[in-house]
Image (cartoon, rainbow, N blue to C red; front, side, top):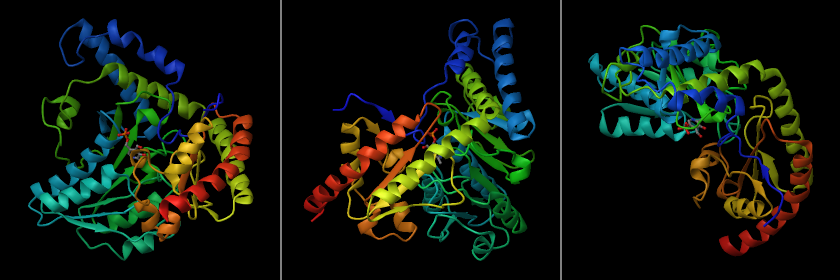
Length: 392
Ligand SMILES: Cc1ncc(COP(=O)(O)O)c(C=O)c1O
C-alpha cells in the first residue's frame, strides 16, 4: 500500500469545509430546541433554519417558502418524482406518463420504474446520444400532450455530461408536463437559478459541495401540486413530515453560500486539473476514450472507458497506490456488472466493464495530478493483462 494518498472521488463525496463545521457546531448542543416548538429555544433554532432557507432561496433565485429541506439528494429526487406522479393520480389522471432517461441517478430511475410497476403509472425511458446528451428536439419526439413529468438531470454523475435543461424544460412545459431536475452533481459548479433553468423542482445534496452528508433540499415551484412521500407533521408546509435537522440544514446552507462565493475560482481550478487528466490519459493510454461530452462537461469531472479492462480491478490497483477513484457512480462500486449507463450510451461490453471516474476538488494539487498521470498508464496495463485472465 502506497504512503501517498490522492482523493479523486469528489463526485462521490467531499470533505466538510471547516467553516461549515464551525457554523453547524452551536446547533448540536447549544441551540438544540425543536424549531417547531413554541418557546425561546425553538425560536433560536427556527431562526437558524429560516436563515438557511433564505440563503438557498438567494442562490436558487426563488422564494424561501419554495425550499423544502430533506435528508439527502435521493430523498429530494423521490419527493419530486413520487410527489408529482401521485398528484397526477390524485387529480384522477389515468396512467400518468413519467418521462426520464436511463442515465438518471437511480433515485430517479428506480423511482420511476417502481411507480410504473406498483402505482399504475407509465414509464418512458428516452434514448440518449452517445455522449449522454439529449436535445430538445429528441425529447419532443417522445412527449405526448398531458404527460405528468419529465425528469432529466442537470449534470450526470457517471460521465459528467451537462444537459440543456432550459430548452428541455420548455419542451416539457409545451406538453403540460412538470419538469424535475437532479442538480446534485451540478451544485457548487453550475448556475442553479431556477428561473433561468425554468424547472418546477430541483434537487441538491449537502455532501457534494463540502457540506455534511444526510441533508438535502428540493426547490418546489409555488403552486405545483406535490403529494408528500413522507407523511407526518405539518413541517415544511405539509410537504415533508419530520423534525427539521437544524445543524445539518445550517451546514448545507453555509456550504452552498461558500461554494457560490468562491465558484469562479473553484470552476477554474477544477477545469484546469480536469483537462490535464483528460489530455494526459488519452495521450498515454491506448484503447481509451473520454466518456460523456467533451464540451458540455462538469468542471470537476473526468471519465473514461478503457477497452478490455475490468474497472473494479483497476480501482483496487489504484487504491493500492493511494489513489481513490470510482468506476462510475459510487453506488455501483463493487458491482461486477458492466456499467448500465455506458451500455445505454451505446458502448459494448468490451468497453462497459472498464469505466473510470476521476473527480477533482478544492484540495486537489498539480503534484497529485502528475502522480496519477505517472501511475495510471502502468496500472492500466497490468489491469488489462489481469482482466484478460479473469474475464477470459
Ligand atoms: C446525480 C445524483 N443524484 C442523487 C444522488 C443521491 O444523493 P445522496 O447521496 O445525498 O442521497 C447522487 C449521489 O451520488 C447523485 O450523484
